[in-house]
Image (tube, rainbow, N blue to C red; front, top):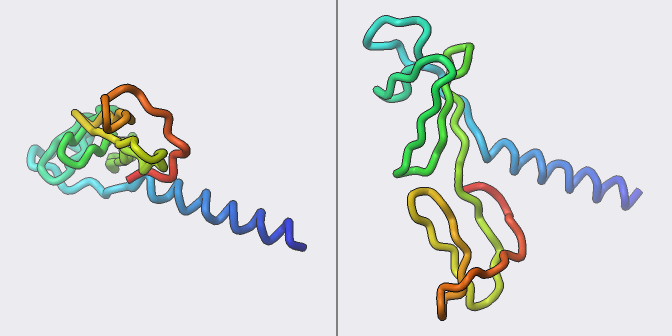
Length: 112
């Protein structure tokens, strides 16, 4: 009985992490009137085209259903003492704060 409770809790946590990683936006009506494009807050994408918002570090993709699917590019990491996560151009680097040499994360907890 305890094992099944632990499995259910772990599965619900995993599902929660996955749903937090990506989201769907219904495409807004296109200002150009093209039905084979997606419109995400004024950014017009062709079907199959991707776009990276470097301010929010979200990667968005125009699906065949003309909805926009966006996923977070950054993770929350658990890092050892003395390590920090630096972000530049939506790329994360885990380094020792003292000298900037690479540091190993203890775990990736979730996407931001």
